[in-house]
Amino acid sequence: MTPWHLGTLHPVEQVLTIVLAFGPFLILGAVVVVQRRRDAREEAEEAETDPQ
Image 1: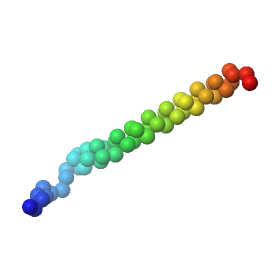
Image 2: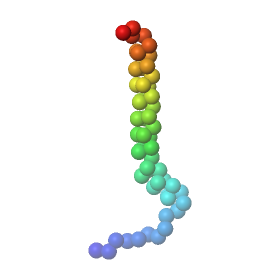
Image 3: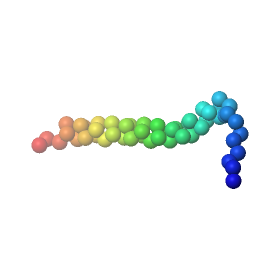
Image 4: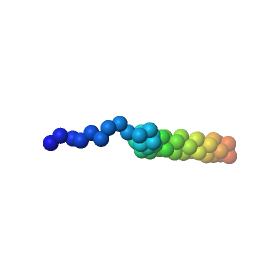
């Protein structure tokens, strides 16, 4: 069985393909960075208010 090749993609299709391929990883990375900053800020606040 020979796979069909429909030719080159339209520029809009190329952009859509790239966004669908890499977009979820970029969003996940952003969520991880934001959550780590939030956790670090909470730990710093706890360290300031905790007199040990």
